[in-house]
Length: 258
Ligand code: DAK
Image 1: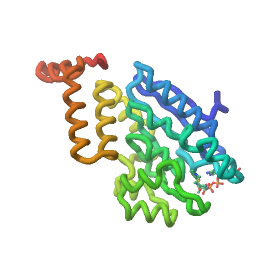
Image 2 (image 1 turned 180 degrees about the vertical axis):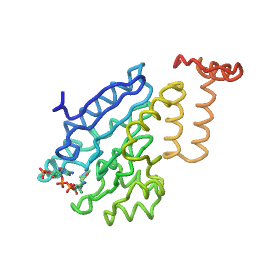
Image 3 (image 1 turned 135 degrees about the horizontal axis):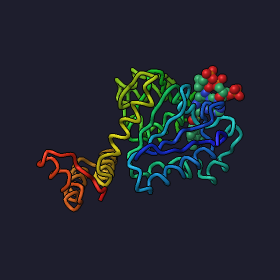
Image 4 (image 1 turned 90 degrees about the horizontal axis):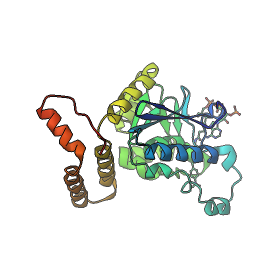
C-alpha cells in the first residue's frame, strides 16, 4: 500500500518501518504516530524479530510534528487528547533494540523520534535541529530532556534556543548520533548493523537495553545494582551457557533466544 503513512517489512530477524509521507517531508501527524506505535509493538512481540529499524527517505527522516495540523489547536485540545503522551511515547515501551536510520531532515519531532531510538545511524546528508522556537513553541516530545543527556547542556541550549542545525558530522562529534555513513550506504550499513544485533541472544539484548536506559534515570549506585542483577539473571538463560560453551569449543553459538 503506497499511500500508507508507514511501510512495514521484515528482512531476516529485522523489522523495518519506513515513515511514508514524503510530500510533507514525513511530518508526524496522529495517523502516522498511531501506525508507527502499532508497527513497533507488533515487531516487539514477534519472536522472529530481534531488532527494529525506523527510517525515512533520502530527503527527510521527519521534518517534525505536522504544523498544518497543530496550527489552530487550543490548550484544551492538546490537554484533553493527551497530545504526544498518547501515541508518541509508544516507542518507550519497546524492549527490543530500535535503530534510527536518518538521511536528510530530522527536525523537531523528527529529531526527538530519532533521540527516542537506541542507536542513530546518520547519512552524511542528515541534518538535526530542534527549531520549535521559530514557531514559539518548544520541543515537547522529550527534546529538552533527551538532548542535554545526549550532548550536554551547552550544546542542547544552543540547539533549542537558537534553532541551530547540526550537520551529521557535528552530530557525530557531539554524541547525538552513533555513527555516520556515506549517504548511499545508509540502508546497507544500517541493515548490516541491525542483522548483526538481531543475531545475538534476544533476552541478553533486552537486558542490555534496559540496563543502559537505567543509566539515564537513576543514581550510579542504583544503576550498578540494576546492572549486576541483570548480569546475574543471564545465568538463568540457556543462551548465556550456549554462548560461553561455544567460545570454549571454538564454534559459533546457536542461540535459542531463551
Ligand atoms: N509540518 C507540516 N508540513 C511540513 C513540515 C512540518 N513540520 N515540514 C515540511 N512540511 C511541508 C511543507 O509545508 C511543504 O509542503 P507544500 O508547501 O509542498 O504543500 C513540504 O513539506 C516541503 O517542505 P518545504 O517546501 O519547506 O521544503 P524545503 O526543502 O524548502 O525545507 C525544511 C525543508 C525542513 C527546512 C522546512 O520544510 C521546514 O523548516 N519545516 C519545518 C521544520 C520544523 O519547524 N519542524 C519542527 C516542527 S514543530 C508540543 C509538542 C511537540 C511539538 C510542539 C508542541 N506541545 C506539547 C505543545 C513539536 C513540534 C514540532 O516538531
